[in-house]
Image (cartoon, rainbow, N blue to C red; front, side, top):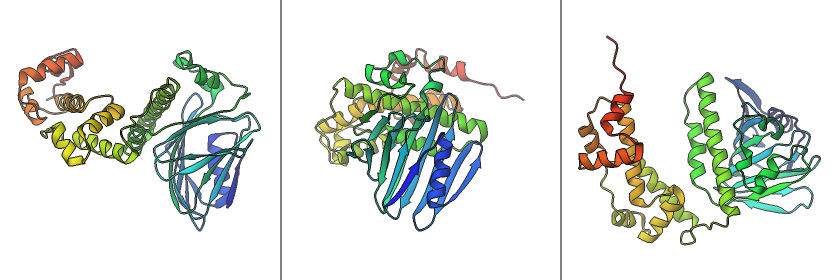
Length: 342
């Protein structure tokens, strides 16, 4: 096993300490620091992006060719870590008792430690590792005026205000496929410079929100949909993506059930869990969001838009558009229309 000790005082130093242990080169572009490794130990990268108020992002996309233990010492730099696993499983271990927890694909973890404690992330040999880690340095984050931590549940509130690092905390999250879409959205951002960093920062806060929401649900005892297994939830997620990509298609619950091999009950349970909507509500939501984007970005008239997204009645479309957005499609078009200068 390759044992890498991390005694970093900042998120950026983590990259340097990994590099010193197993090699690689660090590149910096527009505020993004990227450790690229391609040797006998590993192939891939670890990326670090800092933001204001003690928030930073680490993203691992790497394959280790031998088992690796990343032992993280809780120095004065001892952030809350919000981790989401997109690929093969790995293990988390507190140094105090050496007990391990398996972190499966699409699961999340929230943890922090006492000062001078340690945590280990143990990555298996020849596994594809892709994890998204948000670091929150509490003393800095609490200075952010919009950080209303009083709204957090009691357990998370205690973690955020523990700026002297007197307690350890571990939350083993459950299956969450929604978060994968937000994490993957970061990789699709093509902008450069400050605009790119602002877009990534916005996604980081959305992911952080999902972590907190999931912790709240678990804390409240809200169960997973027991009628579906992970493989079936992945199928539901793919159906949601197909509807987003082609909202005009004439979908029906019966047709989606036959195409997916899932019962109508399982489909409804899956859509409610992943998208907080029934199948019909989700289709309508995607069509309305698509229509709003078309009104903003194209010269199509309202009737053309109605038929291009799969509706057959303009009056029905106008009714549900106003119910959702508070204005009629025509009123919305007047709000967002920018005349072309001649």
